[in-house]
Figure 1 (cartoon, rainbow, N blue to C red):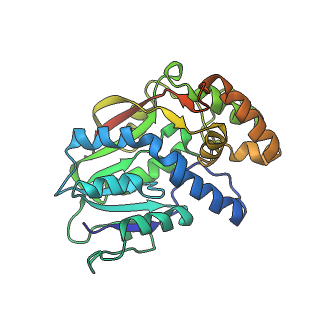
Figure 2: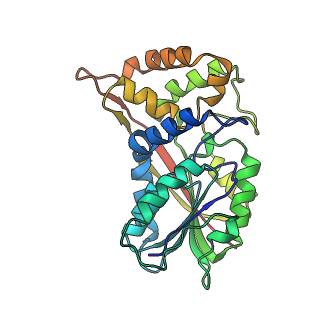
Length: 288
């Protein structure tokens, strides 16, 4: 394994962010909450895609919006060579700690630069992932451009995995995320170029693949429940996604946290835990 992690300004990476970055203390806390609470929620999505593609030795994987690196770590544990890009340096720092612990071989590289710096050297990528749900990105155009650029670094016919929310009626978290939509005074219908969550359309992933010049080659659905030890952990985890940044710009943090906690009440169990069943969808596309 030779992991490569690159800071790259991808509009779709890691989480949705507002134009102005949060204060350093808030950013550090959110990064910690993402890595410790929220990131694991999409593990079933990662594993389902890896199983379907047979990710393992011989796989050269590029993770777009790799965040703090959990998906990369799972691929590396299967024997894949992994590289990752993300705009959030604080999340990348955690990814470096996970993927380059003491005792790793000298050929392990952690670099900072453009997308091309993530290329594995003498061999092109053969798997590209963009796991972060399409409905959680700031601009479709930015994600399209990044996928197009990544496809140019991959072998012909390489798999590109796109992740997205499933049908809104099968995603309990959708009702909670509408708090962010309402508090940020965003319109009921998603507008391309706006920030934050939106309900997924049936053909979102296929449309994105077509925009990026990719050829769809199968899809699947995965159960990804969001489970938390208590409501406080749920609030911290959901805020760490960045989907509430616009709401935090429009309202006081105390109000956002209060309304988010209220929206979580229907999903709190008798033992105090919070459980929200969700279905996520993934599309396997191929480079031309």
